[in-house]
Structure formats: structure tokens, C-alpha cells
Amino acid sequence: MFDAVIIEKNDEGQAASFRQIALDALPVGDVLVKVEWSTLNYKDALAITGKGPIVKSWPMVPGVDFAGTVVESASPDFLPGDKVLLNGWGVGEKHWGGLAGLARVSSEWLIRLPAAFSARQAMILGTAGYTAMLCVMALEHADVKLNDGPVLVTGASGGVGSIAVMLLSGLGYETVAVTGRMAEKDYLESLGASRVIQRDLFTSKSRPLEKAEWAGAIDVVGGQVLASVCAAVRLHGAVAACGLAGGMDLPLTVAPFILRGVSLLGIDSTLCPREQRIRAWDRLAGLIDVTRLEEVVSEYPLSQAVEAAHALMDGRTRGRILINVAG
Ligand SMILES: C=CC(=O)SCCNC(=O)CCNC(=O)[C@H](O)C(C)(C)COP(=O)(O)OP(=O)(O)OC[C@H]1O[C@@H](n2cnc3c(N)ncnc32)[C@H](O)[C@@H]1OP(=O)(O)O
Image (cartoon, rainbow, N blue to C red):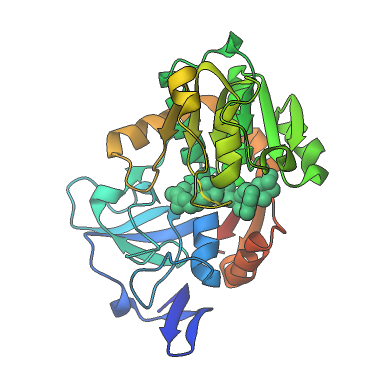
């Protein structure tokens, strides 16, 4: 038996609970991992609270992230004792995920834990940190340079936003944080934001082109916020879009793209190719000052993951939510 959060569905709806599960209930996979640390991302909170259609197969152990140690392996790529991590690949959606003491998964989804990080540190970063890194790499690839002007981060006090602010400011970009929670101004400045501005400035319908202010942007919100950001990007700037916390719609015109040459860069961390993931984790290893990770984290035991998911959905958390699975 092992401890897990499990989401079950019946005629009355879905419910998540913390309980013991039998070993033989684990799904198929060629590697068995003892999970030590996991996390809660916005997507996990949607799954646990039932506020979004994340779960595709029932019952489901949620958790798109985990880090731990290989216990059994039928793959030539991993041996018992290897330290590994996993982000995405439909784990926690279609295949049992990381909010459990054990996970049986495909070896193709695992990567080795970078030497720069402990399992705990890797999970403070988790999918949010790796997604933020993919966004930064996309802006670099689009040639957004340090002296081109300020770079915006929306949803800045959340998991992706906090790490994005840390990474961009660490690289030397003038980083401007957009938040719905101005009470987090000091926190965002401590992460490296040179300015913190209110989300309200981006929530009204924008004109096709607004005053060109931003050299680039990382957006976790989508909807009107993303549209307003695109309309205010400078000539040949770029926006990396990775989230939909504010909605799926995109009420904008083609003006920013055809009149200012703005690029809208889609970031998908779930099915991102393995080589690109490894590059992102290598970049994180080079850029993140591990002594500063404690500034962005709140830690919960696995037994309290369901309560933490409700707090995240209600906007009562900030930064990264770390789940201590091994105890
Ligand atoms: C964590 C990464 C992933 O899960 S990537 C996986 C693949 N992508 C997806 O599944 C997309 C779905 N997920 C999202 O859209 C998420 O927004 C996200 C993944 C991009 C960000 O997740 P994160 O873990 O950073 O979420 P947080 O809850 O910690 O922070 C969210 C941030 O957005 C603000 N926000 C929430 N609701 C709204 C809204 N309706 N309108 C505008 N902004 C909203 C929230 O308050 C946080 O920022 P703040 O500074 O407080 O404004």
C-alpha cells in the first residue's frame, strides 16, 4: 500500500481524497519511482477542485510533476537508485501522477535530476519553473535583447510568473511585473521586478495598437490581458503565451503582427520534446540561485494537498506550492 491523493467520479460528481492505495492498482509503465517531492500547479488545482476538465481517465492520481528515486526499472536507460524528475506528458491527467508515494511511468517521460538541484529544489521549480524557462528561451530565440526595453510578466505572483520574474531579472532584463494582487508588490520587487503594475490596466478592451511599450512579454493569463499586451509590444518584439488563467479567448486584431512585426510564441510544456526539456533544465541549473528558492515556496504535506489546491484556486497562495510526499 502507498499514500496518494485520488480523484474519483460518480453520478454526483467528482471528489478528491487522501488515502492508501494498493500497489497492484498502479498503471502500467517500465519504471517504478519512489516519489519524494511533488508540486501543485494551477492545472493540478483545476483537476483536484474539479474547476476545469483536466482529468481524462478515472480514478486519477493528480500531479503533473514529481521528483524521486527509481525503485524498479525494465528500461536500459534507468537503474534502481537513479534520481529522476518528470513534468507533464499527460501525467496527472491521463496517467496516474505525482501526488502519491509511488508512480509507475514510461521511461520516455523521465529525465535525470540535474546535478545542480536536490529533488526538493527541482520541485520548487517544477513545471512552473520549466515553463517559465521555456518562455524565456522563446523570447531569446525571437531575439528580444537586454537593451531592447522592458519585458512584462503577467500573473507575476503565481508559480510561473514568480520564476519568470526571477529568471528575466537575473539575466539582466528590465522586468515589469503585472499582478492582480498589489499586496505582493514587495515580494515581486524582491524577486527582481523593477516595476509592479496592476492587472486592471490590461483588462479593458484594447485598441488594435496601443502605445508601444514592451520589448517582450511572458503571459500566463490569456484572454483580454494577452490581447492588451500584444497591442502594446514594440516593433519586432515578442510575447510568449503559456496560460489561460484569465480565459481561452483572444480578442485582438492582426495589427500588432502585420504593422509592428510582433511575434506571438506558443509555449506547450506538457508535450514539449525531450531534448528541449533537457535544455530548459540545463539552463535553469545555470541560472537559478538555489539559495533564493525559499523566497517563492510554501510547503505542504501530501495529506494537505487537497486543501492547498483549494487555496490556490481561491488566490490564497503565491509563488510555488511544494508537496512533501516522502514526509
Ligand atoms: C504551472 C504550469 C503549467 O501547468 S503548464 C502546463 C501546460 N499549460 C496549461 O495547462 C495551461 C493551463 N494553465 C494555466 O493557464 C496557468 O495559468 C499557468 C500554467 C500558465 C500558470 O500556472 P501557475 O501555477 O503559475 O498559476 P498560479 O495560480 O500560481 O498563478 C496564476 C496567476 O494568474 C492570475 N490569475 C488567476 N486567475 C486570473 C484571471 N481570471 N484573470 C487574470 N489573472 C488571473 C493569478 O492571480 C496569478 O497571478 P497574480 O500575480 O495574482 O495576478
